[in-house]
Structure formats: structure tokens, C-alpha cells
Length: 178
Image 1 (cartoon, one colour):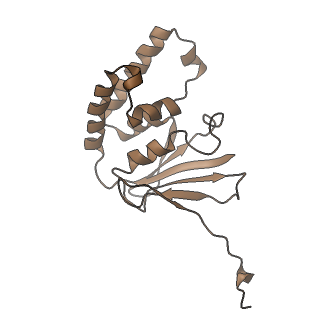
Image 2 (cartoon, helix red, strand yellow):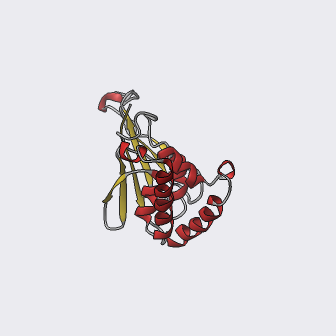
Image 3 (cartoon, one colour):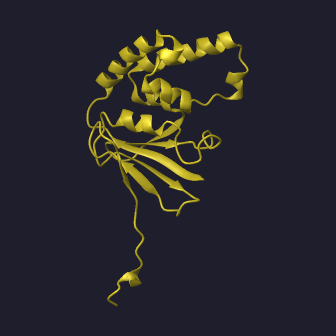
């Protein structure tokens, strides 16, 4: 069972041009029939959106209008926080240093479907891998039924796969020469 999950990131470049590019791509995608829409951000939204009872009880037409309105607001906002919250779910955002931020997942929303992390974690890492500082950007989580040690996926190089890292527990008396 997941104990905690967070994304710690440091921005290397202004993400606005990337958000604008995604805006154009998403507008093209939204015009296609649903079965042909294959943008990774649309997949992330589907996997990670949490719709409470107040949203589910609305008539279908009203739900679709609200979803489209939120989508348009997010993609044209050019605001990283708004964009991330729309496509990747609810996060609490904290300043974690002079140029570093942290998104902490409210995992109560996701535990029913995914006990081991964010449901769109691969898409999230792809997104942040475009404009964040390597080695300063990582996803950290701890799974209680595992060995209870936290581990990280670290951005090693922009637009490349992230590297898995875990701490190693060494006891003082582990030296075989003693």
C-alpha cells in the first residue's frame, strides 16, 4: 500500500512554450473522434481525473460542457499549476527551496485503483522531463508492503527515461573484516 508520493522538480526553462505547443496539439486531438484521440495528456486526464459525487450527479450534457470548459481553461491558462492539476489530478503545491517546487499527491483519491502510485505516473514523468533540471527532478514514493524504504525515479536527461534509485541500509557492523 502506498504511504506517500511526491514530485520534486526544478524548472530549467520557461515551460510556457511547451504548454503552448501542447495547447495546439490538444486542440487538434479534441477535434478527432474519441477513438482516434491518442495524446498522452488526454490519456493522463482519463486515468487521473477524480470526479466527486457532485460532478457525477449532473446530467450528461452539463457534465460534458463542464469538462470542455475546464479543458479550455487549462490549456489556455499558460499556467503550469492549472495545467498539471487538470491533466494529472489534484495536487498540493509547495515551494521547496528558492527555485524548486513539490507536488504532493492526495493519494486518498487514487488508492481505490492504484495502490502503488499516481495512475498517470509515466505521462507525468514524460511531461516534466521536457523542461526540468536533470538530477534535481524526481518522483519519490514509499510503499508500505514493500521494504518500507522510499525510492525515487530521477530525471537523468531531458526527454529520456527516468532512472530508478533506492537507498541502501547498511548497519555499522556490516564490515566482514571485523
